[in-house]
Length: 94
Image 1 (cartoon, rainbow, N blue to C red):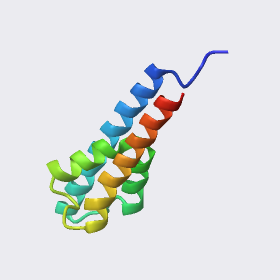
Image 2: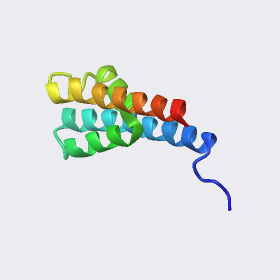
Image 3: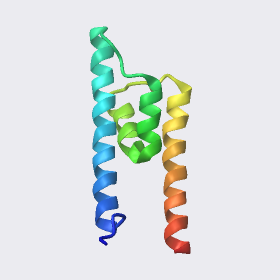
């Protein structure tokens, strides 16, 4: 049986989820400007928590979106840092 969790697949996943994270921050900012339906904050945090932290954090600062909300300003980078630490720990102990 072929292994699913290869280094190549993990890298493809992380690049994809971070592009999605960046895109949803852009989309939510655009919707905020137009005053239309918004992406729920819970969804933004879920995308961050499943590996899209670099993309959502970058999008937050590039689009100046959610930067006045402390839970985003601290939450996105904190989740990202914790995921990086866990990833390094996993690689070192493997």
